[in-house]
Image 1 (cartoon, rainbow, N blue to C red):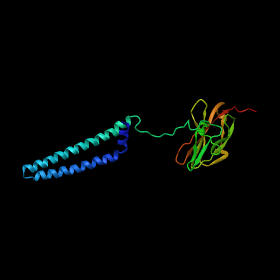
Image 2: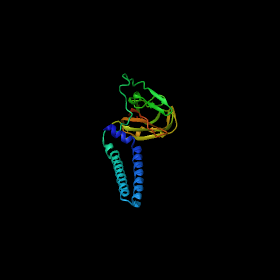
Image 3: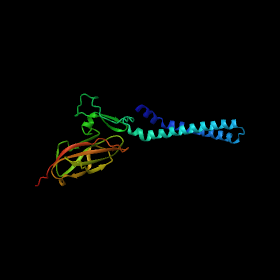
Image 4: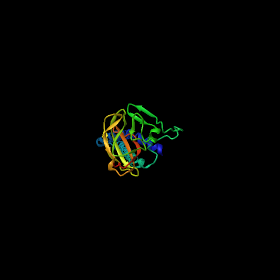
Length: 230
């Protein structure tokens, strides 16, 4: 059943063209037979023309019903049948790499920029030399005015932004954004962590390509400490 529905969906345009051609051909034949019938003088001629008209109308009606049926199947039946549309979705192949070393993520570089592999996903999208933190590092404590620094250096870079959120929430708040390549250097502005309640937070670099494709976030955990009073 799935194979039949898949075939009808794949060749629907061709089938509609075929039905349309059949209908047009036999409509013309019916018209010609009707014209012969209207000028026929003898009963045998009229009877023969009438048979042609009946046969032509039957084929026109049959082809029309088939076209309507095909439309109904493709529009209403096929989408409701699971397994007809087999769309390939990007998934992580857990069997492709029996041994995973998270500390040394592997990355493939193409003309489109960063292509993270399984290790990059497990390392939250942080890839040394392309998207990574220099300060703060994962688990490090910060306080007061913080000069965030790191790397955003991929091909086809559109823009990036840096966001933070409390550890137990997904309420991401923007800190800064930029479009220029940053290579193991400050991102260009200070972040005043003194405005935050001391505690555990998460901070991430979110990178987009020129095609507005969002890459995996480079996310780390940090501890915001109270500012020491002199």
